[in-house]
Image (cartoon, one colour):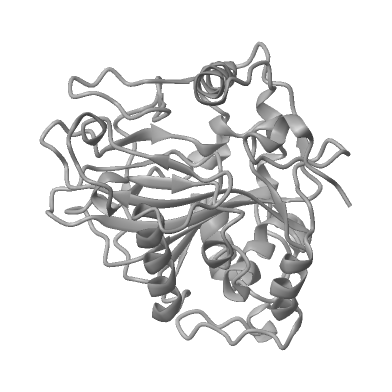
Length: 348
């Protein structure tokens, strides 16, 4: 059993004393996770998951980014191997989506205040006179202490697919509920092309995966995800703030050097659809051209076999320095390595 140090309690971040990502396995979590040990979840109709889909000529060694099990079909595995992402239709039930939405609204109204939760605003909204409701909040992250929202991370259907990439020993490392606002006209609702590994000081990258679920219909009008297929096969590229005239949201770093002519795929998704993608996949999202807010919920998962790496002298040092400045300004805490700020909660 591990415990959070006094230093980390101020920021509600959890690390394992062994130096690997993780956190305290509380009794409440054990009860919640008991559901995962029950009968196997039913198959998604759009994607059969029976062992019959694994042909007798199957050779596990040909796959680098997915693991051998009977959940993904050979076609699905090959698609992820080639492209670095995979969309599973109608994975999360509408009732669960509504629960997440209701809890988000309670947080925005300040009816609940989960420990360690980070509330973020668009750079233009932050300077305006919005009152305290969901219109003032563009993202909440690090909701590991909120049982209602964290149930997304322990959803058996989500976990079933996550294991295809991480294996059975899983940790929830970074959680977000994104509430992309209508663009103010300055295009600040965009998210520049980036790689999520830029924010994570742990490896190997092939044992990390993001689950990102649409909480409503998402298309190019309200700012769907845009991915550059196959870029997960490359390396981590240098990131920094893009030079956008209308301003850039805090920590919205973008890749400084990529081929703008590479083919892009816009992920049009329905409520409950979930995309799983590799942390090196180059992706971003366009501006929200509608009058509504576009919501999605996500979690980055990692294998418990992942290990921390020192970012000193690497392209990731920029994010460590920015986090140091933010924590010192907000909490008066300084000189905490990036690896001790990564939110993690052990699942299995």
